Image 1: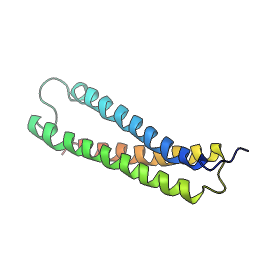
Image 2: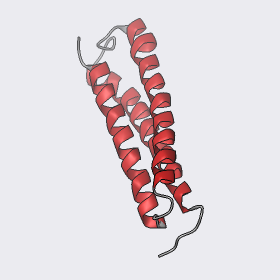
Image 3: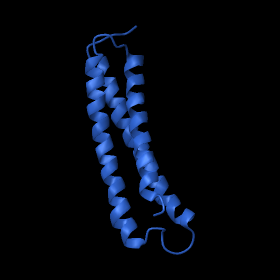
Length: 115
């Protein structure tokens, strides 16, 4: 079991980088799928609304969730810094990342839901 004074830093590092990667994959994946799912013609919410409304909302949510992952990762890492080994610190980072990406996915389903 490897314990050092900086092992806790793995939690926020994994949380932030994992959340950033997950949010980017979801954002660009949805951007590619929305025209395909809506079929020919305009997007389901109308062009200006999709570009200005949902797009900005999804970008703001992505930035907010990466910041939430950073704060939660630092808080969890520092809270468990005395008892943490590297594997548990990384696992806590993945848990934070998973919850943040799940929140982004739920928010995107709500944002793209047909009105």
